[in-house]
Length: 144
Image (spheres, rainbow, N blue to C red):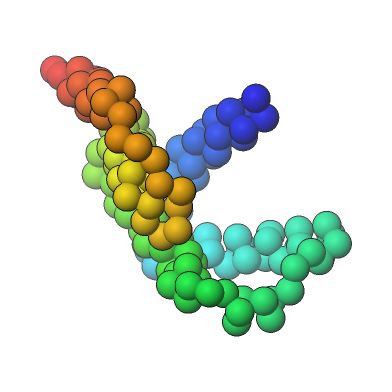
């Protein structure tokens, strides 16, 4: 149950952040905004790490087996950029519908093929139908 609650909070925060970042971008620039977002995230993460007992070591990063996994920050910067651009172009609701649909589709492909070390799952028609229903929902939402 806790996982569901955290996921709902995450989705809400992502939607709010997209709107906030788009507003900041309109008054500065996309790269100033993205830099501030990443810098403030770094400060919060480091502060939280210090307060919660400094679990883990930064030196452990050099021992990561699959070095490509260290690209999370780069991907985070690209996410910030693409969310800002999509919210600006489509509005918060439409942008988030497409973002969430892409997340579902790519996450299922990653699971299906066991990409990036994810646990491989068997193909299930109901999951594909679920994604199709989401796409139908987007078409219905967009319909004028």
